Length: 254
Image 1 (cartoon, one colour):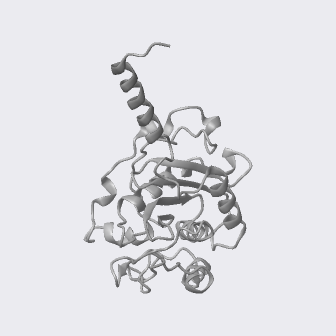
Image 2 (image 1 turned 45 degrees about the horizontal axis):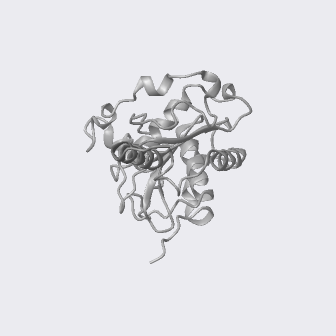
C-alpha cells in the first residue's frame, strides 16, 4: 500500500490521540465495573445504620469523567432510580472539592453550604448536565455500557455518600459516590467500599482525626466545627465513629 508522508503522519497522530483518550487511559488505579459492583454488594449486605436498601455507585476520574456506574440489586429498578444521578453528583463533588493533600467528603459540606455557612451557594455551582445524565437506553443503566461512562456529569451534592479516592502513593485519582439509602448510611457504605478497594490513603481532612469522615457535631442547628452533618440514626453515627478501628484510612508509603 502506498503511503504519502503527510497522510501517514496524520494517521499516526490520530492513532496516538485515540489510544491516549481511551476511557480509563489515565485511570489505571480506579476500579473496573466488576470490582466496584462486588465491593458495593458486600458493603450493602452489612449493617450501615440505614434502611438496608440497594444502592447505586459511581466512580469518576480526576478530570470528573465517569468511569463506572453500578447497582447492588438484581435489576436497575431495585434501587431508587433517582439515586443513579445522585451517586454521580456525589462522586463529582468529592473530586471537585478535594485536593492532593486535603480531602473533603460530601458529608463534610452540609453545614458549610447552609445560609450563613462559609460555603453558602456552593450547591448551586457546577450543575448536572441533563444531556449526559439521562441520555441513552435505560436498559444500560448500571452496566458497563451506562451512557454516563466517558462523560463529565457535573453536579454538586452536599450530604453523605461522596469520597475522594487516593491510591497507595497518596495520589488523588478521582472519587466515589454512593446513593440509595439515608445520607448517613450512604456515607458509611461509601467508606466501606473505598476501604475494600484500597483507595483510602487519605492525606488530611476536617474531621477530628484529620480525615474526611462524617462529622456529627450539630447542636441546635449549629455545627461546632462548621463541617457537621445531621445525625440520621444513632446506629449510623456509631458505625461511622468506629471507622478508625474497623475501617481505618491507610497511610501512604514514604
